Amino acid sequence: MKVLVLGANGFIGARLVDRLIETGHEVKILTRSQGKTKNPNAKIFIGDLKDPQLDADSLLDGCEVVFNCAGEIRNEALMRELHVDSTNRLLKIASKKAAENKIIHWVQLSSVGAYGSVPDVDRVVTEETKVNPKGEYEITKTIADKNIMSMSKDGGFTYSILRPSNVFGPEMPNNSIRQLIGVVRRRLFFYVGFNEPIVTYVHVDDVVSALVLCGFDKRAKGEIFNISNDCSLRELIEGIALSLSVPAPSLRIPKILIRSAVAVLSVVTKGFITQERVNALTSRTRYPATKLKQKLGFEPAKYVPEYIAKI
Image (cartoon, rainbow, N blue to C red; front, side):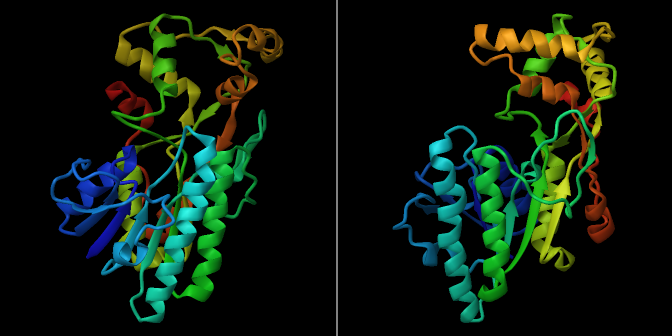
């Protein structure tokens, strides 16, 4: 099929482009400069997604599926412009083409951040959980999701929304796992509290596989899917220790002591050590991929503690 990938040079988008081309699809990508593409077999369309003057009609021309993997993860000032405004402009063109009987299927890469976080609580999040995003990235991604669903009702295009947890793999831009690996390597890691925390990661290859299903499996139309391959923090840490050939840590320090210390240290370290980091090490939220399995027969295949060694 003829497909368009937005965010095609990003961590997830580049792998999606490779997979689509390998399986015989004709792939168009949007890029700001002629030579900036990681796969020479992709067709290049020069333009900036944030540019209101972008020729969106020509960009979408002939495309049957659009994969929107574009995302701004660092500069909050650009997030609404990219995630909301740019998406809305393209959705209007998708609606226009639907009126001409050229139906486009829109696949949106979103985030489980749409559901917000609740520290220190056992929590199971499903696609039916009420959205409650907190940060600018999560808020703008959730607004885009709502706009897609709303405009699809009147616009005639179809959609699927995929919400991954923390995506990891070689060349990932997020350094949180690398920092954690460094702490284990230096034998400085300790557990916070005595409950069993959950870590919510999913391998990039599993996310790409789910995106492809969302793009071409008719059962995915009009659906939201969460994807995560949750495991316990202990399993992750022991996997890291094994890959580094160091002893698995076992020290546990009461949570109240750590939170008290962090309250002081966050001032000294100018925000490097924060309560949010403690939350990440004590979270007990799960994102089961049950709906993906029930609807599409898919579940993540790459067990996080095993593949962490490749980072």
